[in-house]
Length: 297
Image (cartoon, rainbow, N blue to C red; front, top):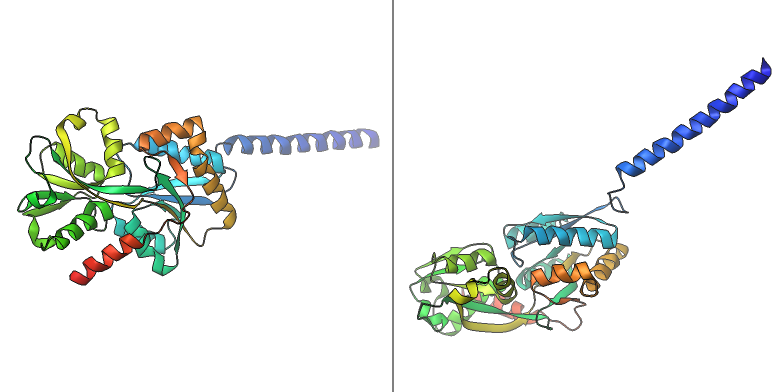
């Protein structure tokens, strides 16, 4: 009896141990799709990219998650103002934003530059005045009393730069156009011009180049009337509360995109060459422009 009892107890322990292993394997299978670290990282996206290219943005999210081991979630913001508020409240950990947004967040001590994109091999871009080719407009001044599209009220290239240029030329920006339409997206501003809903628009040169790649027929129907810049390019910023370890993982993944086959495809769709560290890149030019506009109001 004693021998049988000990034998049964031994086999019972074996079965219990096997059950624990099986449970562990099942849990690993269930959560195998999850990144290495449990912490979720919220990545804010604004109108500095073509939001219509959702598939590519999701590919970017997956790429960064795979190359960092972080659970990265895309968070789309309709307005730059919403992005600033969410960033200040630490609901957004890092974000792809307008240079003017970064300038506004700098005094709060919440934001710092993470990386910046390269457009045509440089960390700079321009504000473009566009219209349909059949129109006779040759400069921004020609849109007086016309219907015009700005992207976001706080966009550097899509709102602040054209207003600054009008002010320099002696016009009151808020009285110059017959009406200003805010599209809250550079891609939507381009479409508004393309479809004849507005006479002209001010847009980001990076987004414009990306749009033309996806819409081959648009280049035959649109033209650039004036270019303003260059300005320091739209950066990726990060909340200062994020740990150094996570920051390093994000920087490494973003910098390596231009050396990776999948990364290159994502960058090409975005219309940029890659990302670099923001060495000696100053946003003082945008800060000065904002100060002049605010002082004139």
